[in-house]
Image 1: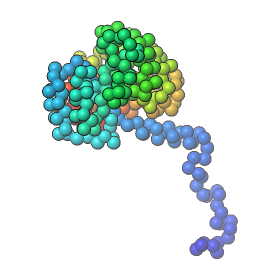
Image 2: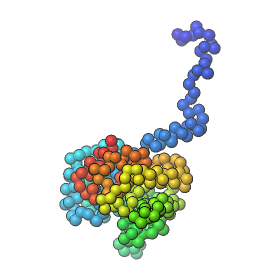
Image 3: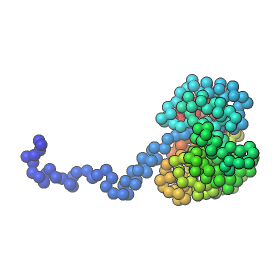
Image 4: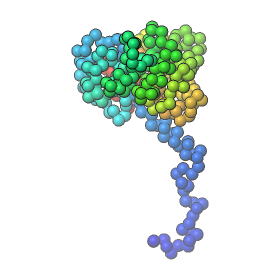
Length: 288
């Protein structure tokens, strides 16, 4: 060694040598939390609702999206066609690097449940995602918190990933009940969730869905932060830091760039704008 001639007390310098990378549990825990927060991969969902009118239109849209590629290592893109179209457009969307999702799933299993499809059908069709609790299911079809919990339990058991939708009505927002509503809807499903890696939360203020009204970036961030803080208390700091929370409600190429800069907004669940070629502008804005 070129320094072997130096006295041993100079060679061994415990007071000057750097400490190990993770010397104590508190520091290790803190650094791991920072890494987890930085590792939340953005996710964009496209909810086509009861659109478009024909399979040909879905094919045309997928072809238009092909003109603007995205980097799937930087953003997850999940598209939710109507159930009848899904198996026909699935190969086209997957060829673009996207995944597909149903807009709904049954709270029951196989049997005499007319009009339903369940998690076993999704697995058989290699469909890895579903929406649960969308406000239109809640307000137009009477889907209760108890039903969303039953659906969540079925999905967790089957390994189906869920975009779980929460959000308040206009009168609830004006009454200062936004956090109360979101926490109630989350509390209903928390006991059913054991694998948080399969969960994405979509905060969609009902008053902003399809109305052209959008929560300001600060309003959206405030609510997303409140959701994350609630999960920290109700579940764990680890889950709160790693779970992805989307914003939904009249998201467009014009407003997405500013919204995505907020630290607790991890992507979007897009409605009407996901039926246009410009949906890809949202995707590329999110990927950075």
